[in-house]
Image (cartoon, rainbow, N blue to C red; front, side, top):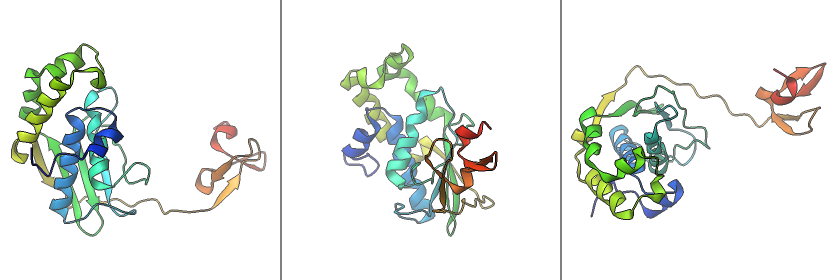
Length: 198
């Protein structure tokens, strides 16, 4: 299927298994970049705020967002809000912010697929037959953006990232390097948080 929103093979390899939510996040990320007029982030200028929580299996969406946008957790460009929602706000300081959320009617469409019957029984995605995974993936790829996503411009959204610093010290207790903003003082000596007892 020719569709620019289908993730490349490396994104599935990075994610670890075939499931519908990583590609949903990938598509969401590409659409958000198009909407804001930005390119994939090479450095530290595009921020992403997934509203996912823990304990719901649709969080795979976030790996797709990272793969599409380059706004990765490792570059400190991604910060979870833990609202327990399938939504993401994308923010560029010069271009503004947009929020994408999955529409209930789109999510209800998953009920008919064997893939989710397996998931509800506790089967991990990598253990689900390939035919079941491909069936739901192809359905996702065939849906329109309008059916899948609610899109909201967020003109009042503001975010100020923490200023980066290379300053560091050695913990006087364990001897490991700790970055300055995380250093604490205990008995007049520099310590890391775990050694501080805080």
